[in-house]
Every structure is written in C-alpha cells, then in structure tokens.
Image (cartoon, rainbow, N blue to C red; front, side, top):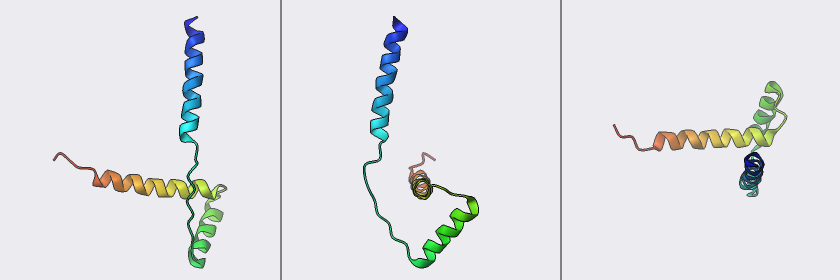
Amino acid sequence: MAKKLSGIKTAEADKERRERLKRVHRKTIMFNSDEQKMIEAFCKRYGVKNRAKMLREAIMSTILRQMEQDHPKLF
C-alpha cells in the first residue's frame, strides 16, 4: 500500500516539476550577418542540430559563471 501511495506522490511531483520547467517566456535576439555566419559555421563544424538549445546553454552558462564570480566570499 505504501508503494502505491509513494508512486502517486512521485507522479504528482513529476507533473509539478514538468510544469515548473516548461519554457513559456519568449526572448528574441538578432545577429548581424557576420555573427550569423559564425553561428552557422560553428553548428556545421560541431554538428549542432538544435541551435536554440545551444544558444540557451551558452547564455545560461555565462550568466551562472558571472553570478558565481560575483558571489560574496567570506575570505
């Protein structure tokens, strides 16, 4: 009986997590011709199939790295 209830709680938690992680906020970015050529060359060279994912990961990694550097240090 406990396993069945646990499975229900897990399913509910999974559903909540999926809803929370759903991408609903659209951002638009524009590149000039040279930047676009560089992106195309990069994607071709490294076999990037999902450019949105690649750009999202690049942006978020830069933000996280900067936030980590700006984090107050004790010593």
